[in-house]
Image (tube, rainbow, N blue to C red; front, side, top):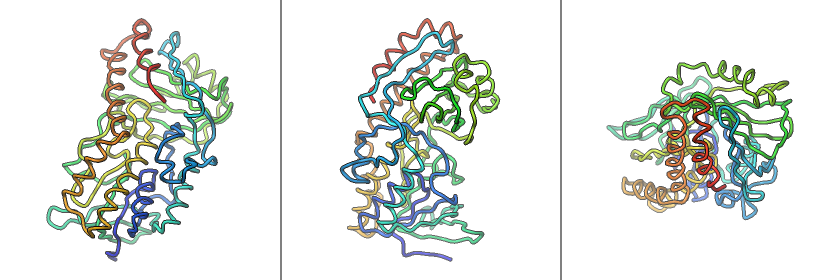
Length: 384
């Protein structure tokens, strides 16, 4: 079955896809969103964000992010060397850094998208693009065993790093896509629930604890591929189990822990790619690296870029009825001049400097302690 009466088809029901869907729909366009899972927001994402991000006012209202999505306010973030003998402490402006319930945020976005008359196609896995010559004109997707086709005027791909679609040659994969474990844990021993904790490890990797209360947290571990190309050979689960038993702080925090969510994922730590589109298809979100290269969270940046794209390119599509290559070029240039893009590029540079400083060449814990003051200055000078 083939459907043509769609203006915009969006692939992926995460925050980037939902924000884009809402924005395009607000331009009076007919929008459908395809999500391969049976629910939205199935994967756990980075859940530490800035409360005052402008995109929240654009999406929700002047009050910004709904209180129902806010779980906790963080006052500080502490970074430990591999030996745990040295630390750096980063302080946040009052009430600015928060931990959220990611699924509550997703549910709120879904409700707004419904109000804006976005059509949802759940259990709809996009398996291929439809081409006419060298140009993509539509998508082929599978829903409940049936093969279906959509031929919209515009396709927005927000499929993330876990999608099965191959990128066109013009779109390069993000740099430093690294393996990670994302875990939700209960029964922790957390002395300060208002403090984020990051633990640099002996190999180029980091573990983290993002508290939700004194006993519950999101935690994880990631290995930086740019500093340790052999990361794919390491069993992350086994590595994490090792540190639970041997790390002087992690073993204390997790002594009686109960894991209630446990998933291997991929995180882009290398910054955004330079080309975001091919004719008729624009890429947003993790798939093009719009993730902060130090912290790994792309919620605000991906939502902002998705929403801004819908606002600009959606307006052009509504006015013209069709899009030309110049329209895509203009939209990309506007995004790359935005404040969020500038921040992504700055984080990309800072992250590379920090990882090179600590791990290139690979150093012992004692050597890292000796050069810690330089790293400490970089961390403590960062904003919210």
